[in-house]
Image (cartoon, rainbow, N blue to C red):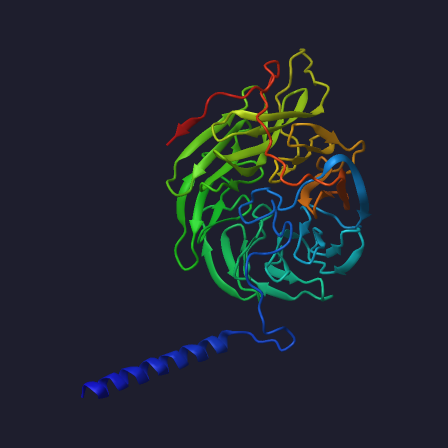
Length: 449
């Protein structure tokens, strides 16, 4: 009897497995024109997502230029651009227009392919593990585009309104997470919806990966964590809307600029918020770029006063390691002779490399690099004509000793250095701030529960 019972259990398990397989097979869309081998693993390329990677670190995997900067090439795409170009695993730069048309440029600036989509409007994009450029359209569709095909690889209906702030997150399994104004939606590499959840607030910044969680910072500054298959959990809050986006450090804290002059961080495991630094007489401009150091993650960002613009690097304790002047302005005055309130202009976050070199676009349109030793080298020309923004939409690492500048006027520029970056160069040394500078290092960090 015992053997018979075990045999019946085995038959039942086998039948269940077959039934599950049949259900899965019935749900799986099969297209004989597509390869049966799916590419998985972390997305390749120098910058497959906005702010380089899934942590939105702004940390370039390749060295930034050294020596005197020059424009290697300038490409007029004829597209309306409102997001930074992406650098994918095939070595090309994917330039996505506001209507979803994608041009692929190689390292010499030659156009290798252009895929015309012609959507009404699209949100920010990401490149998945197999090289598909994915974005959401205003019509409620998620569209995937490949360089090798003149037609979209897939178009998946998800409904909802496109989210122009929350850039998609490419996953290591080949899928992607896309945000609408109310939902997070996970799609697999074929464009099929795998999971979906609604958030109580609108995601207001690029989605971030933290272990098995997808982090969404909402328009109010609240941080939600979601593991697909479970309910979203509120992990903490910045207490105010963030500027430009948040970056995740190796220690598991999110760094972002709030209230114009606070660099704040939220511990996503404990929920506490702290203030790393305050720009006492000026503004910080997000998003920050983060880089691991011996004592923790440093944060690099733009700073602004009425008369000058800076690139600033702060250590984990909030003290300035570097402050490099990158712009100067004629101070405006009110009719009564006073200074008007300082308002953050449109801006793009800097990117850093492992040596501590920093590529920046100042708010007056100048583009340059701050070397690991603090020396500033700026291009002698304004590479992006003044448009609705400062002209610069964003910076993208694009090969060793180079980066790309995306202009809102439809121009893409590749900037290189006159010299190859030295191998094994030391990290940037601490540089004491000038006591005469009005920005100042700010007060000591404070902790808010």
